[in-house]
Image (cartoon, rainbow, N blue to C red; front, side, top):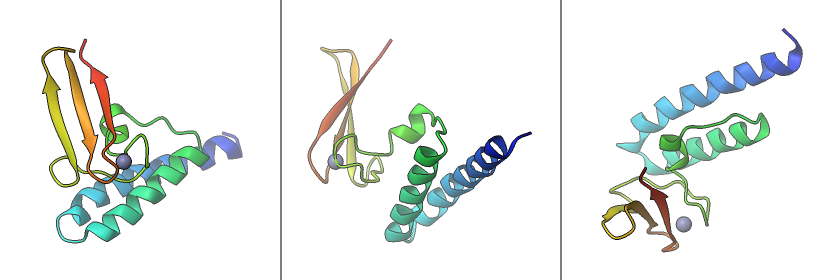
Length: 100
Ligand SMILES: [Zn+2]
């Protein structure tokens, strides 16, 4: 295994660990959760780690802040467009995830 792959694997582990820590710290310390989320995002950007939809959904597409459904983001189902509408309550930006 070369160094690049190894670095990426370490970063992947780190992102996994951070995302489990985020869930824990969300309950009592939102600032800490935001810092951890930012770090996880920086790692996955730097090492080109693909994150799943459930992880990508936690970041606003416009202001790139960490958003939690029910806390600072709103999720609605649209009957007309057959989509999930996710609204960031920081900047008010709405983005849609189409249902298949
Ligand atoms: Zn936003």
